[in-house]
Length: 259
Image (cartoon, rainbow, N blue to C red; front, top):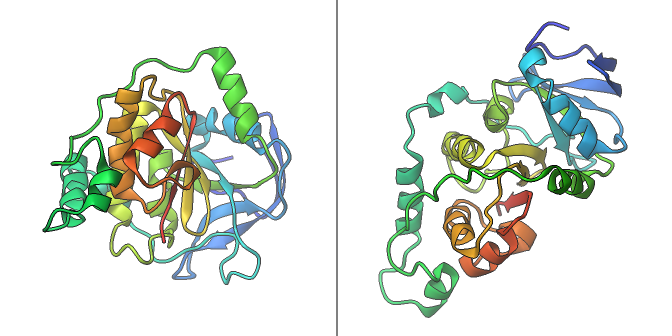
């Protein structure tokens, strides 16, 4: 297999991983394929994802678990116009999230808003510090057990997992405006600071596998502040910083959803 080139339709073997028959998914323009996706769910999809992720430096292909809904025009991926992820290179993630925080801040005192932003009821607290402690081998094995389920496996030719949504032109942000490149910049930052790699892509939701999750509530609160201003709902459907933070401590899986 040529590095960075999508497989042909049908079954494929990548390193030691055998994948069942898949098909090419065309981009919104209909000219070129943007992904290859198995036609049927794959058993032990979490461990398959992990094995394929380990081969990315050789293949140039980023694996994802795909949650497409039958009947969608471009099932199993919800697509619009693709973006060049290189256009996210110069974006300031801290400034982006600060702007979203301020845009949602009411002009007058609002108890409900203050409750969702506590303990940070004033200005955006800034980007959370990087976490340097990885999961232990036992924690990682347990985390892989958590994400191991039947799911379709997709492959995308991308330089890093954070760039996948831009490369395929994901349309999960249809009601969020022109936000795909800013989201790419945030995902890159999380990838760098926490080892948080995109693992699952749905119609309006995304999941990340986190190699270096926050270990304390205080650290988790800073990350939760970033997530709450980025998405409509976060892990387990929570949308208040305090609730999100409690669920993020030691959690190897993050989830985001947009209305």
